[in-house]
Length: 435
Image 1: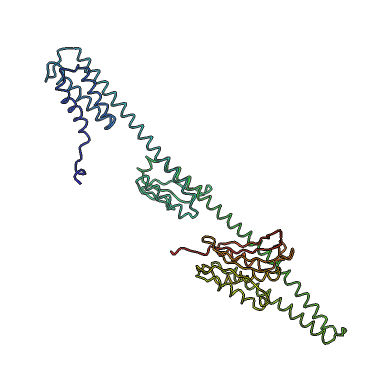
Image 2 (image 1 turned 90 degrees about the vertical axis):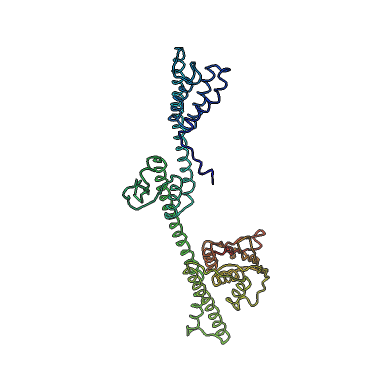
């Protein structure tokens, strides 16, 4: 653009300001006193001092005194001074102009320091606000180098060792040297405070992230230990009863001194068979739980909720043949999740309701924003249906919780209507944006 080519030299206002003012006042010198003209020229000097700095203001002061003598003091257009009083006027005018220039220069310098300090404070604020939002060291390094490079106007980098030709500030994680914050020497001299604070904030953030990871690992280990203990209690309880029944019935059959009728033999054999089926069911659950716990990440795929429900009913087979369920499943939008894991969890929810609850059984599939929930309602038959700390709820609940955790969801049981009904709820984020 044409305006971009019109670049005036910085000294032009220092020369042009007093000269233009003198030319404008020249036709009015008959109507103005020398004091008025001197004040007008000093006003121009003050403006130049504020806008251009002390160096150009000093130049404008000297030029103003010369123009004042040349154009407004008799004899005109000469530098001769017949009235010695004007020498004092010139001296005072020159002294005042130079004083204005000096004070203006100091003010500009202090103002620049304040602006520099405010820029550094703004940078510290942005660092303190942004670093806690990053947990990985790599993300912290990228955020800090990008922010500091933009604010300093110089490349800032992070290295494991101090590079040659750069100022390197050590970043310490709990007194242990982690990395170096590096920048050019020129940037360090003008932004020393900001860079030192940045190195300190980065060290604190690295310590915070490390402690957070350690806390998370400890919490996961505690949850794993608690889950393992719960599983062992549940497994021992669930296996003890059928094993004791099988051993008791088998001992009766093996005792030659016990005389049994044919009908009693059939009853004992039937009892052994039924308890064996219970044992087989428990081992199937153990295998299901093992499969769930071995899978680190679910395989997300588009699922139709009704198909998951049908597969869960087929998984338990004859157990649900004589049971009536009321279904209310929303199928308008497919859900995202692992079909096998959700099928296992839902089958255990239904089985627990049938074994430990009372009719009516009602299963709902509901959307809640981006969350999908399987909600199972059933009647409550007493304390057996409550989740207890001794593991009496069996393996079904640990399986459901493990599946919910893998889907970043929740599973819980609640009592409604003063303990008259029970509700089991499996909720997980079932809708994902396409990448």
